[in-house]
Length: 355
Image (cartoon, rainbow, N blue to C red; front, side):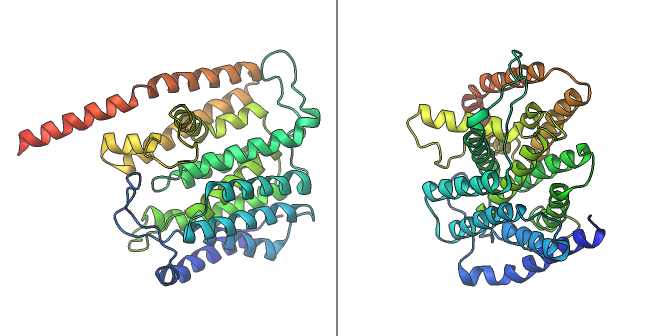
């Protein structure tokens, strides 16, 4: 169903779009400028990664067209998010517009493609939780949540792309066969690689720094949740609880940050420097070290989830273990701010002594 040619096309078109858009971005105003406290880059960077990735996906789909007609609704949802995200990257849209677009994209998936969660499995240990008439509303809620989680964790180089790469690769390895969704995942990975090379300046590629942009983070979150819901379905390859482990890092960070904002009377969609990657970057004075730590944690948590799945550990056990880790994370996070201040004061004192 998929050939090396399909992946090569996705990689090539993504690379060509990056190369073509990079010199044009300043002229059309598609640039991410530094200035906000939460931003760590010092120079304007074009957020064109998402447009390039989507271009690679479309080109590959046109080459092989392995999808059923219903899957076109899913691609339409992806296109909607890329367009809205690109407009947001250029002009800046309010959170309400982005939220509505995410709901519409999720509805295209659920109602158009039939990608829905019908059961949460034996999540609490009292028997299977069948969603019944709440299947579509809950699936849309979960989809929007994951899309936002990926969007919000895209704060340092390589983080969102790296987490997506880990999750998609895991889903591919667990899949019993290569079907239409697996084709989408393979071509997504192929189209994602050129972005990661430029964003992280790998293999000697310098002077071509790019960001995902909202177009990219929304697109990748959408593809991930599409694959997760499909895999967690009745004929899927994972239990619903396993999906939690695959997105544990963005979910935990987003829930903590949004909960903290609500408690302080601030909009949960407002931007700040309170994410885990911001804290780790300040502590280690390096976004690359923060990236390595967070991707390592993502691999570890994904591994735990896969271990539980393959060894048929009870779904309720895996859920309660996941919740215990989340509670432990919240308890530690309570002291993050004071610890960060103490470390900054210590660093200033040491710098003063050196001078």
